[in-house]
Structure formats: structure tokens, C-alpha cells
Image (cartoon, rainbow, N blue to C red; front, side):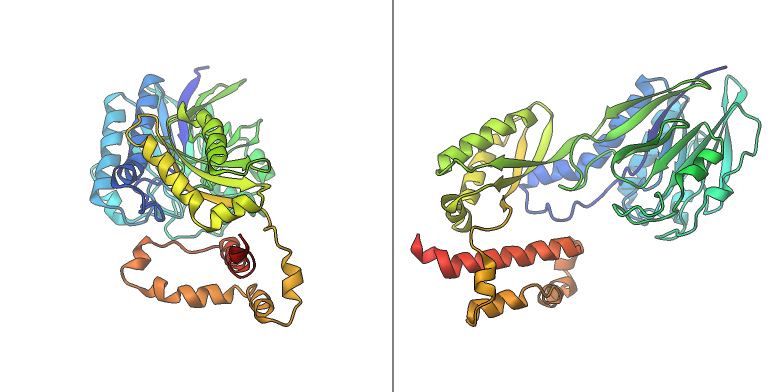
Length: 410
């Protein structure tokens, strides 16, 4: 029986605005803005180089439901390139790019097959003029699908291979919004040969037999999405499936934690950063968030007085213009401060009152409300999670404690 060769990708998020990175130098921000388009180019080239039969794009091809003309034309260009090499494309849309009629009106080449709505439908893929695979899927028509779609995935043909495309998450998953929830055993019971999943931005082999696979996204979007990003090249036969991960990101996001317990000078901190950051310089362009743990009183002083920020500015300036550059986006202290907050929290003074009030996260929303309503500022803002609000409050506490108890004793 003929072997199938295909690319499985998901969550391309083409044209994401990368909110929160606008403070970068303009040349770097331009590269970041172009990163999803460059990753798409690498995806296409990978498919061509591997001589695949088809490409599966499992939801959130675009970052938004309404796409710019530029983003649509880039996607159309990618599809035309694949068409020139007789590579079919099967596309479903997810919670970010839930299907809009404007995209359907585009004149796609005949190799492109769009799942048109929330009903599970199928396409039959031919190889050497013979029906070889049936590919099933659906597209979101709204920002959220809460229905379990698994019961609607049923074999409709007698082709040798059956492949399901499902943009959703395992029931009870707490790491991502739970849309189109499914149980793993439900997928297994369908007796499909491969389940191409999307929605979770992390590579995950949910099950080996049959292969139930998340490829992750093709380009990281923030410091929460670290490491290599890309797609899977799949060789599928009835008796064996081989998956090869191929990184195609153009910019990486990384977090680096450094033990500074024995360091007491700015120069020593710079040396430690330089030593540990070298591993990233050979891995392409990289944005790094640095966290200093086990810090002492000297480093706490450097941090709150802005000296570490000056040091980072110096390091970043050295890297500008280097081909395989890295950019340190921020440097922060990790862990609890050196002052026992409970000693102050239980007192009857001004600082104690501040510390008792600070856990109230509602105050964060009140303070930031004018920003969210500002017609210009809100374009560059993303909503804060409860964890981010808690971190802001803790940082505010630490700054207050430093200013009121340590600053004048340095």
C-alpha cells in the first residue's frame, strides 16, 4: 500500500500584532512583525523539499477573524506556490480566525480545500489518480465552539487512510481555553489512521497508536511560548508512522534563570549573563527574559536603582547589527524579596496598611481602567491574567518595601 507523506501544522497566527513589543527598536520590531510570514515561507519550502502529498493546516491560520489584505495575499501566494508543485492544502479555521465569507471569496487554486463551516465534512485525496485518503474536519464560525465534535467524525468512504483534523482540546485541559472538547478514547474508537490536532501551542504526542498529535504553533508569540516552533513531517503507512519535527520559526522567545547568590558587582552579573547566553547566539534570532534568583542585598539595590536596566541597555547595544542576534527584553528578580513582609504586615503603621490592602486585585483594574478606555493606548494592550495581576501587586509591594525600608540605608 502506498505511503502518505504530509506536513501537519497548526496555529500559524499569521499577522499577529505582537502587542507588548512595540518598545523595541524599529528594525527589530519589523523583524518580529514579519516572523509569522517568514515562518509560512519556511513551511512552504519544507513541503516542497520533502515532496509531500499535502499540507494540513489545523485552525488559527490567521491571528484574527478579519484579516488584512496583506495577510490574505501572503496566504494566497503560499497556496499558489504549493499548487505549482502539485501539493494539496487542507485548511480548517479555529477560534482566532473563525470563518469569514471574505476569505472564501478569494480565488484559491484548485489544490486548496477549505472546510466551510462547523459541520464535519470530508475531502477525498487522490494519489496517482486513485483515492487514497479521506480527510475530515470543520471550521469555527464563532470565536468559541463548546460542542464535542468527535461523534460527527465517522468514516464516509473506503479509502485506505482516514485522517481527522480537529482544532480543540482534551476535556479538563487547564492550560488553554477548552474549545471543541474531546476525550482521547473517543478519538481512538473512531479507528482513524491519524488525528491532526491544533489549538495547543505546545508540541504534544497525545497518543502513539493511533497517532494523536499537536504540532504546536509555527512561531512563538511571547515569553510564554519558548523554544523551537514548527511543524511535523509525517510518513504514514498502515503499519508504521514516522513523525519528524522541523523547526521553522524565525525568532525565538526564551527565559533564562541565573543563580546570582555569589555575585556582588555589576561586572560579575554581566559576565554571568554573557556566559550563559552564548548557547542562544548559535540558534538564530532570540528574545530573552532574564530572571535572577538567590539574589543578595547588593543585587536588590542594583535592581531597584535601575543599574541592571542600564547594564542590559549596554549588552543590547553590543548585539545590534549582529546576524544571529539576541535581545534581552527585561531583567527581573525571581523569588521572594529579602524582607519578611509579614513582620510589617502585622504592624499598626502606614506600611502595614498598604501591605494589607495590596492583595486586592480589583485595585489593578481600577488603576488601569483609563488605559483600557484610551482610544490609542488600548490598541497596544493585551488583557492581563490573574497571575499577571498578582505579579504586578507583588512587584509593587517589593518596590515599596525597598523604598521605605532599605533605600536610605544603602
